[in-house]
Image 1 (cartoon, rainbow, N blue to C red):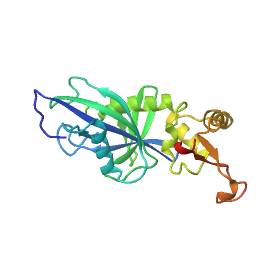
Image 2 (tube, one colour):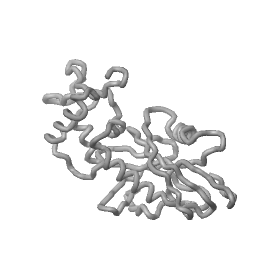
Image 3 (cartoon, rainbow, N blue to C red):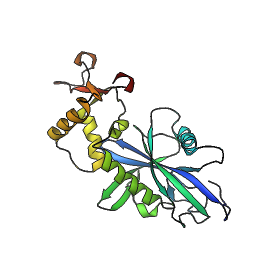
Image 4 (spheres, one colour):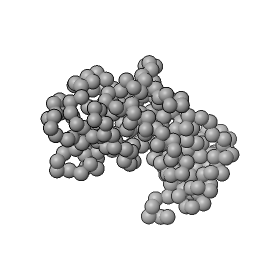
Length: 234
């Protein structure tokens, strides 16, 4: 974003709340600001929307720089328009929730998200704690809003499947781990399997893989593997 903004102009930016799940934990991907305001503070990656492009094109360009390859899912989260959210001038943020199967390497740092009630904190790679309120601008509020949105919709939409590294070959245990990471609590395996069967398998969103096509993993009976059925096959 530009260092100086004209006080009599309205600016629109896109901010990307990029979330991923790794080893049963939910992470947010942040960047450290190099310039004022909030120089040195952690922030969501963002970019000003150009006069000659739609918001989606701006977001696509931003994500392409950080994630040149691989799948990604995003949806509009909320429009943040507080009058004083940017000390340089009038800036409205159209925030987007982005789900990726693994953390990209485009200059972003993964922070583990911990949410207890309404208190949100981030755990840095070195183990230090970063309260959500210490992020640049109002990005702590954007982060909290996004996590609550994700928690609220994970059990009635397909968003959890966008965190899978291999949507064409996954176990219910892997999927359950994603649900538990987002919800920050254990999920009963029997109830979870019944939910998956009625909500995703019976409607034809996922299907079990033939056991003969799956390579065995270790000793004992291999876990049943599933795949997300592409839209053109449903």
